[in-house]
Image 1 (cartoon, rainbow, N blue to C red):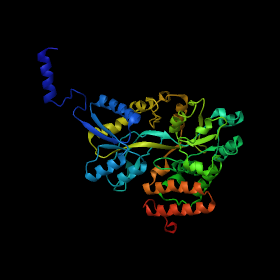
Image 2 (cartoon, one colour):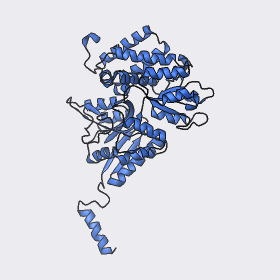
Image 3 (cartoon, one colour):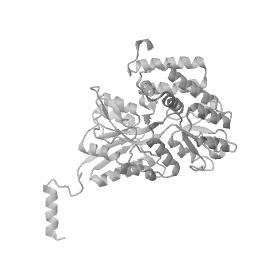
Image 4 (cartoon, rainbow, N blue to C red):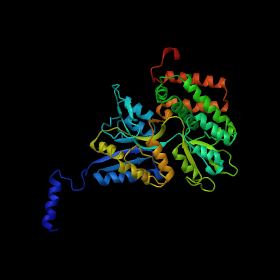
Length: 425
């Protein structure tokens, strides 16, 4: 290239709107999130693809204190352009307060509108995207620990939880693995049990009413779900004290012992990371497998959402990019990511092993997809739910359950959610 030609190109870049470093040269977007370590590295790999394709610089801050930092920055009037939100409940709070900008035009994938919320004007709009998902409601087992007849039965369609419970009790008198301890909020593995029973036994309509605060905790569908969970607690060999004190990530490890200490573990897709750390380094497919929670083609998910607090052009481009198949595949292909996508254009072949591909197919073929109920409830309600599970497990009697459900309804009546009938409060 001649010196004269180079000078001409430099002048063109300086004095015209043509970008010589990519379509987004000079633009930037800030992201606040909770991903650090390997998760943070995976997200940065996704962002690198965005930067390369757009020329827009991304300034990502990853911290475990993201929730508190976001609240502080909003209070100071200096929010990030975008932020990762831990729960749909957080998204709804920020949307109602007018802090979030709608993300109109974002791709709607598996499950339809999962990030819709009412804005300050009361109109429901999509206010976020699901960046990555975890599939909940999976019932895990160790094939080598089960009789051949039980394995054969699990390979057939299972119509209801009652049918699954019969299969489980046929393999052992006390077949269930269960641990409720978690450093941040113990009890949630029990809420997952109750939520799955409500969704699969009573349907999405009842589930939605309950989540929104329009169905009493003392109603029959919710009471029945708690009672079903009570049979699971009674079906643990370790006893209630161990259930309360055992970490959720270690609860399934006895499946791999000889002889096994339990046979069935109800957990989300991310539990495989814990199984792989158990003695003997169990392998997916060979040493552990799963069946979906029975009763209808419904799937409960957990997920990380991204909300837009400053609707800049760069922020809108990032939101649009993160839902694309290219961005989603970058997540999935990262070793140990455990990420699942709601984008129907992501092919099953992207997932790292046959078991992950089956989980992805379970999600893709679902007729109904719902977010984790407690994650979708107001923070105070969700915390009360977690605590109530611990209280019930410590004394799973009908009398205690009555008191617990009445107490939860009192919280429901004070959180300001739903259209609660006066007689319920």
